[in-house]
Amino acid sequence: MLAEPLVLGAGLYIAGALALHRRWRMSVSAMIALGTGAMALHFPVDRAPLRTHVPDWVRTLRGCAILPQASETPVRLVTWTVDDSLPLEATLAQIIAQRPDLVVLQGTDDRKIGTALGDALQGEVKFFPGGEGITAAVRGSFQYCGGTTDHWSIDLPARSGHVAEAIVTFPHIEHVGALPLVIARPDQHDGIMDLNRWAQRLVQSSNVVGAAAQTIGPRRMLVVGDFHVPSRAQPMAYPLRRAGLRAVSTPPNWPTNLAGVPLLPVHALDQMWAGRGWHAQRARVIEAAGHSRQPILVDLTPADANSR
Image 1 (cartoon, rainbow, N blue to C red):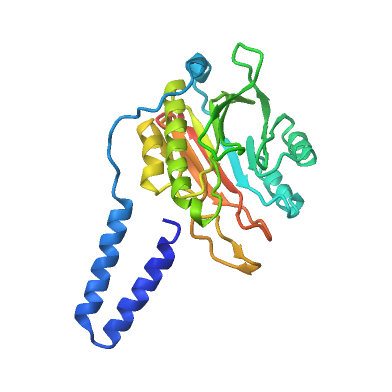
Image 2 (cartoon, rainbow, N blue to C red):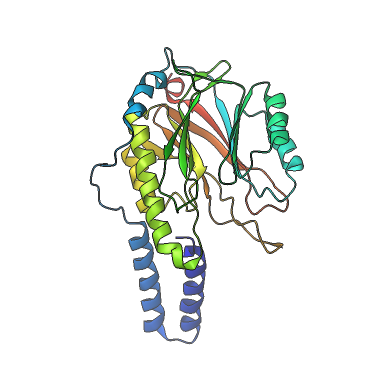
């Protein structure tokens, strides 16, 4: 899936070159092969029901996913996987200028960055260590859901000694209310020899996230995270769709550069999935000089508000 644009471009070049040399049969054969490969890559996978089990305590969060009254207020979210070795301040200022309601940064749990976000949003910030860290800030606060904690972690498949998890929170946004949010942090690969096992871990992680969303209640659910692959990757996308979520269509945000050479982004690896209670109004990327990924900004409105 990641190599699809490159393969497609090379295939079209070959088919065109063959046509210029009047080798019509080979040119047509190349076009048919490209079309067949693309169809096979995007063809829906087996529609078997989800069979992944999540911890029993996940069911206790279901009541907190239901708002007493549906809000008509739009919500603005930003998700971004950062390169923590590069400066973040300039891009962070651009993010803050957009007045987001919720910001999720993967790849950093820097207290200075989190404090700047919290001050700008005039709300609460959560830091999730482990791996490269996660920072989440909301224009409001994170709810406790009747207990003594305001976030819950579900383990995802990972290599020994590595952190992979789905973090469940209930950010309460001013004038909107509380909404269920899952921040997905799947495991990364460990070199070319690990790619096949890594792909299996990604699919298994998607099953766990989908099962959790289905258990908690998907209608107003939001899922954000670095899934490492585009949302068009059928084995990864199917469990989330089966759970009642839909991929929010966003512009590609990766790769913006390779070894310092500017590139045109071709994939959106930082993804957002939403339940049917949300309607995506607008999605765009924010410039991030030097970083391999750009932040993705999405405006969502409650579906009930759109029906009025």
